[in-house]
Amino acid sequence: MELARIAARRAQARHLQKFALLMVASQTGENRLLANWWLSWFDTAMPDCSSDERAVMPGFLTLTEIKLVKLAPPDQFDAVFVEMMIRHHRGAVKMADQMWHSRGDPRLRVMAHAIRHEQQGAIALMHGESGLAAVVTATRNMLGDNVN
Image 1 (cartoon, rainbow, N blue to C red):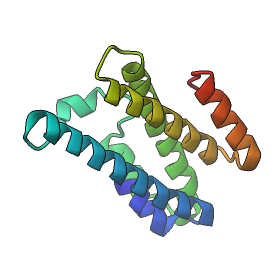
Image 2 (tube, rainbow, N blue to C red):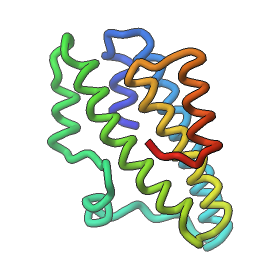
Image 3 (cartoon, helix red, strand yellow):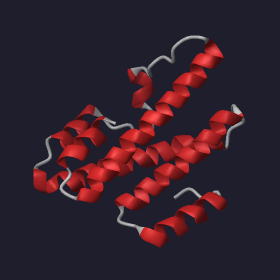
Image 4 (cartoon, rainbow, N blue to C red):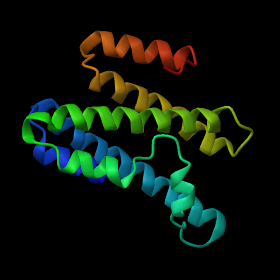
């Protein structure tokens, strides 16, 4: 969410500014939902991931990659932001797909299904897909259980 907040201020393209705000709102909602589920299951706050856990997460950006986005010159910011966010979203799709196809808690599996398609939609938008074509692609992927 840190980079999305930065993109909301720094992106040159207005649609990327708005999209970054949407990413922050979406991630905030997902985080709250997961935290509330965890609390209801274990009666304690959800612990943060360790640095070792984050290091093996697909798509988790390194400090160097985050710095690259933060320090990108204004005329390169949009391209660098999109490149890193697509990498990050593809990792989220991979993790969500693994959960969706697992035998884990059904509530988490349903959420994973939603997350993987939301993330794929975000990737399509960052690639410039829009309008009816974006809706058709997203619907086809969701109903066909496809992962791009």
